[in-house]
Image (tube, rainbow, N blue to C red):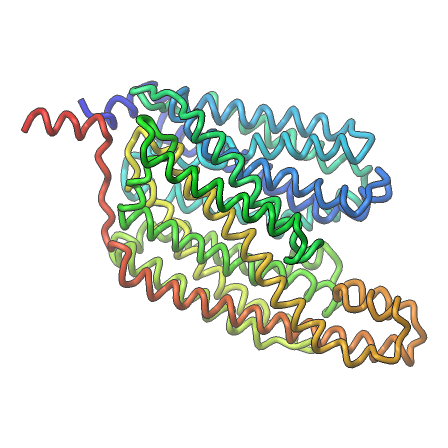
Length: 526
């Protein structure tokens, strides 16, 4: 018997066909709760600084602790889900996230809140890969599986507009701890729905945990993400930055070397010899790189340059999300006709077009062109997400779905983090270079503050006399738009190059990979 049949029948699926979609809804709600709290925390940082007497470093690690935990623990979490049960892992991760949210409502110091977000990162590291890896068991039919994958992938981005909207409303009408209370209904429904409607799925071969590989992967990814997080504050030349980045690279190189010789490796590196897995993961990295490269610039543009408040900014991001959800949901019909290669490469090319359109905006551009550019980016992203994730799932052996999904997601998370740092460096260099000549006659304190960022320049300008503050604000906005346009064109070029590589190297009809167990059976029967 193949592993697929053992894996798929490990637990009899409860309920009718509608129960599967209720189970998918539960998984979506669990993922939405993670993204929602993350984006709400970004909005809430100024409030937390006052309420908890948090320093700038504290604020950085309220988010940084989450990022380090989720990136470094995905691989072992995916493996443990494969071994002990993916449904069990999802329920445990969601419950842990709920407990951490409840603890967040009781936090009285920045240190306590950092600990809370670190635990939330642990829960997210469990949930993100396992919710994806269990879909082939819930939806064995190819078309329905593609639809489910698309909807789950798109759900990750629903929080882009919802986070600012919910965060702004909560902080305006309730106490700051409401940003954690809002998670509990999502968690409760998610856990109940998973228990009732999601089947269990696990690796029947029950491999032992590769402890050396686990420790090396956690240490390597943690060091790499820590260095990436510190770079915007300390700069590339600081020993804490280049030292941790170098340590991360060395540790991951040792991890790869160990995995090549380990008897039961944490990650089967032969997966990367599979073009469907390798190039679909590559496509997702390029897509996340381009999306983050555009969106982390867009929020300051909408708020500072064009003067929108937090909630209005969230509303203005809706064209991106709506277009992404429509395409991700509809890709289950398009992909069988066009093929994975065509869908993914075309999606990256369309993203490049949308990023190029967005690069043309100015301080006086109305919202219409921005909305069109966002919708085009969303169409491209939606065309990439479902086919690429589905190709990854199809290419994974049944007994490695959890850890394989974790590998793809972890690489995607690193691509996002690296994209933010690299794009931030390009933006800052252009911004400072263009704004600097306009500040030569201002005091050093004002000069340095204005060069730090466009929000800081706006704050300084509003405190100065109109004759000085007005020109300063105009110059800062123009400098920011120049930097933003440069970054968007770079990300568009990266997306276009990625589209070309995918068009050549990604199989158009990815095939399933036999598991080690089924492969052994085939060899014996031969």
